[in-house]
Length: 253
Ligand code: MF3
Ligand code: CO
Image (cartoon, rainbow, N blue to C red; front, side, top):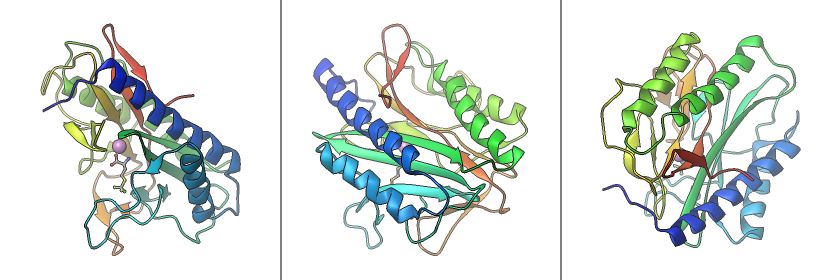
């Protein structure tokens, strides 16, 4: 069941999404060679707390024997998603993706930003650019009457035209009172399939793209997803609202 948010619920979504965008802005300011991923995570946790929000990832899923231990997911180079912040120091040329989800007044906002630290390689910079571009290609398809896989197809087409691959094992999702709601939003597939979009739906659209092959593995920590071939990966994500005429990005300032 895909939930349609009321006006009041959309205002709550806006607030959670604004706080996520604020935390991203603070992380971007602090990001430099030598900072640890734990220090970046501490910034996120502080911004969430100062704004009355909770980090949705910390302790997720509830009751698990191995819940996610931090406020943010920070994934570097060959790490695709769900990297765990710790003592690792950011190096010159690293490709770093920061995925943030918060809960404010019972509603969640979710966004990922990705950077190359310092100058970096040509391919790292292109991968980051194409991850964001493919999000916007998908975003253009978000309007009432279109179908979920119209987004998926547009993302895949953009990524593969640029010579990269799309991760198959993880996907975007509806979002609201739960971090993950219906529908699932794959980043690949034929257009014209899946549920139709309606005003009031809120969706987290999140292409995860690889420099090489699309296959991934999971590290022994039970969380960190890495590329199977050891090549680079990038991720970009926004929470978007389906409007009467199209769509609006909510995870912005
Ligand atoms: N943005 C990620 C997602 O959409 C957040 C995962 S949080 C975790 O799935 F707790 F599962 F790590
Ligand atoms: Co998400």
